[in-house]
Image (cartoon, rainbow, N blue to C red; front, side, top):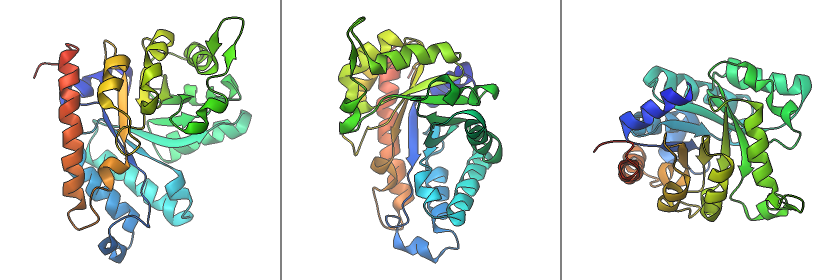
Length: 279
């Protein structure tokens, strides 16, 4: 899926919602434990309930690999179910991989061939060598960590080069764009860093941004849209716990849809305000 196709889906669904499938076996409703694969059953019902509202799903790989082979099986079945259900979502592996050479090439093969994801999050600390194997795949996205929501982001990401007065995250944004096209590279920018989105957009005006942190982490969707949206929307705003864990009862998928719909409706207003859609 390229940038034009992604923007077309955003306009059609009037949404730039990404739903994070951070599925924790200890947090899903207890009745699901009677299923052969509780993790997959939880994901399946969330997907069935929300796929018309979301433009992306983002399984966090740690929640699956922590369960060993059964977790990887649940992940594979989840991706397959999304593919069978709709071709109008981007499937992002939130893996945060970052290595070089043959190791990076194997990571690319894992997520783009073995598990058929559309995109994968990558840590760029080792430079272009980390990302280049992923760029060989047509219509796949490398999602480069630039500015994250966690408190310790200040340890490195705001360090400033005295020669050009440029923060490290700005260097990542500018350098990352030279590695590939705007159909290949997008960046992670945390919603709780909305005050920095003006600088982010100055550094990467045409790139898509994957923005976690709206909902349970306290990020403001209004602020993200105000400072982060560009002429093709350029945003995938993720909510995980704020959607998938709103109920611990048998109605959990219905409750998830309600919260997803509230975000989608708010997003549609911001898209209209930006003259990107008609309501």
